[in-house]
Every structure is written in C-alpha cells, then in structure tokens.
Length: 267
Ligand SMILES: Nc1ncnc2c1ncn2[C@@H]1O[C@H](COP(=O)(O)OP(=O)(O)O)[C@@H](O)[C@H]1O
Ligand SMILES: [Mg+2]
Image (cartoon, rainbow, N blue to C red):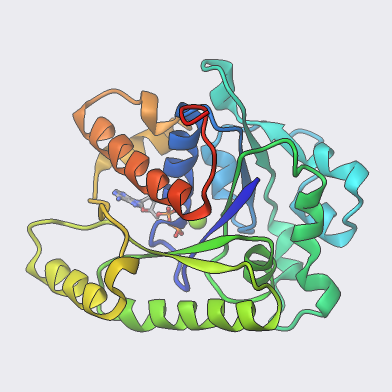
C-alpha cells in the first residue's frame, strides 16, 4: 500500500480536485483505492458520493485509533454503484478541526499511520486530501505518507508557498519519517493563453526543475461539472472531461513510478 498526500498552504487551489481526479484515474485502472478526507471541510467525501449516515469518521479515529474501529469509518464511494472496482473513503468531518493544532506530541503525529496500518492489506493506493495549512492534520497526513504532492495555481506567491511546503516536508523527513519524499508540484487551473500564467510556470520550473509535474492542469468547467454530480471524471461525457482524465492518468503514471507500485496492468 502506497500513501500520497495532496497538500497546499492555501485553500481553493485544487487539492480536492486533484485528489478526486487521481482517485478516478486509479479506480479506472483497477487499483484498490482509498481516499482519506483529512480536510475538516470534507469536500472529498462529498465529491466521492458517500452516504455518511451513522458511520464513524476520521475525527473518531484520531481521538481513539482502535484498529477494530477503522473499517467502521470507511465507506465505499458511490462511484462503485455504476462501475466495478474498489474505491473507498475514510470519511471527513468538521470535528477533525480539533486535531489541527500547531504542535503535536510524538504519539499524536503517528496517529494516521496507526489508523492506516489497520487497512494495509486492503488497498494499493491511498490518497489523502489535506487541509490548507501545515498544522497538525497535515503533519499527521505526511507522517503516514510515502510522497507529498504540493498543489498550486500559477500565481504571484506560488514559488514562495511551494518552497515553504517542501521545506516543511524536508524537516518532517529528517525529524520523524525518513520514508517521506516530495513527489512534486502539481500546477492547476492554468489558462494556457495567459502570459502571466506562463511566466509563473517558468518561474516554478526554474526553481523546482523536474519536480514540476507534467502535464500542468488547465482550467476546465468539466471538472466542476463532474464534481457537482459526484461522478468520477473518467466517465463524464465530453472532450474536455476526456482531456482532463488523460492528464490525471499521466500524473498517476508519475505517482506509480515514483513509489514503484505494481498495477493490474504490470502484473
Ligand atoms: N483545473 C480546474 N478547472 C476548473 N475548475 C477548477 C479546477 N481546479 C479546481 N477547480 C474548482 O475550484 C474550486 C476549488 O477547488 P478545490 O479542489 O476545492 O480546492 P481546494 O481543495 O484546494 O480548496 C472548486 O470549485 C473546483 O471545482
Ligand atoms: Mg479541498
């Protein structure tokens, strides 16, 4: 089981969009996929069409990480009603906010890792949608991860914010979790005609080189439409959904290479 965090210091740059896009790509490829919704806003849970009902959620597990309870906080995505495969969601909750403190004890920082150990044999890939900060929830997510992808828009402060995020990844690797590595920067909401955007992308490439993941993701209404319908992008109709599905396939390829994950195709 390989674990990937999708992070950024800012909200609204596309963490959830990238999480859902990669989940859709992994599902389409037949990977057993778990999405962990660490953001108290719980948008990933909504986007994956889950029925919350009386299930436990991430905040219960963070409060008391008993392995016997972990599966009670995980539900199948509604995506599996119409398509075969495994894609589950560890439910998010506004109550998770209580764990987003700037300082965590040594025990607390390992809590998500502890939780995920209970489902180690059940999934190929775990995608963690992180909150827009570097506080407790993100640190727990990173400590449980093999790779961190930083999502950014091509804006004025994107280099500085990305740098700060990578520095924090580095610190955590040296302090707590030697297996943690940056996957790279995912540049989202690009308007290819925008000179400003091209300038910012060049800046990111000068700074981070091959860590700027290809392709960059353009701004496309189809993404919002698929999300609004809580549908996987890979079955949403239209050329622009197809283009975005292909973009996420390529980024998933990069993830798979980076963590040396065996896929159904390679088996
Ligand atoms: N590439 C894109 N093209 C069009 N809309 C996008 C794109 N990326 C994100 N959005 C939209 O922008 C909003 C914020 O994105 P979201 O993924 O929720 O950001 P975050 O999780 O970082 O807060 C959402 O409404 C989403 O549908
Ligand atoms: Mg989000």
